Image (cartoon, rainbow over all chains, first blue to last red; front, side, top):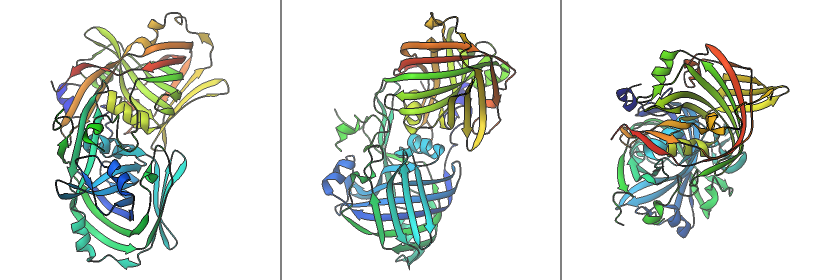
Length: 251
Length: 246
């Protein structure tokens, strides 16, 4: 293997790369998102500066079913998203993610800095209930439920398409081989080629259970605001650096 | 979290880092190593320059890691290609499969261990030391060895055992724009190695072709023997051997 071949490798291992080069197209991606209100001080501690968490103290707990994802296959994800602002622009900061497939874990962490761990999330329709669960290291740590397609979301598909273009943001941390920080950046990206096929709202309930390695309950639930359920196709492209903690930060 | 504290994070996510800082001590770490002859051209193709092939033998290894600091309990399977770098004998780790995210993410992100998620197991079935690897629901490798038939003749000289030889990995991490941001050969030498037992014996190995778990791309021409080790050791940080972007 020569240097040209090495520099064209999309990922490790060289013998069978975990993930190909992007962008990545997702077909029939199905979301359940439950919005709740949490403690303001804990929210502040969970968000890295220079991001500023939303004043309402809202947190989005999500499940995403991804049956057909280019480069990644078929998998499910669950996690926590915190609406924030970066220099006044509204962004969604992804704080925790749990999924059951290694290529999107490695690609997610290594390209963008999605804070992904391996776990067993599930999103399914059980008779009249849209149900999300998350098992980590053998234990249930999250359970969310929504009424099934009770009401189309306000503004219809067009409003949801527009909402999906909101900037997303993650904290990418990759150490150097000697343990020192190598990459430490706030990274942003925007989904493209979005086509929402259905979108609904309903009441929701959410249970989060304290667990040290999947600390979804560290942002406690003060009040559940409601649930959103939608399905669509979209493309996840590469992104851009918003803030570099190594280069932009004066000592 | 304050900006200056972000730089102190050992890993993502901020709220529960996947792995802590090293070094990482492993207790009661067991190996099954099956050595075999393969196609020299396949070895050349699999080795990144400037590594040079060192013979026509490679190995598939199973590891049972019941107690790893920071990582917990897990199992691994790996393909290892002996090679040289500027004349120094090394072992290139070409593929690894583990069933635990902490070592998977830490392995890839710190040292560039080429880890994917697979279900490896190393157990004693009756009279047989058995390693198996399941990837995407299919068995892709199975190795067997006689159980403690003969004590390793070099047990008194641990520097002669495979563990003392420098490991080399190819660390590839893309940037946010998809271009390579890290492309390096990293060297790792285990420290404070205690060999609690070492045996050699007859072994057999079956590798099944699978597109995302390509151990069989180095085909088994002739199995030359098995090694069974029980050790404790420390995995330190690595050092830079070669930077492809420099």
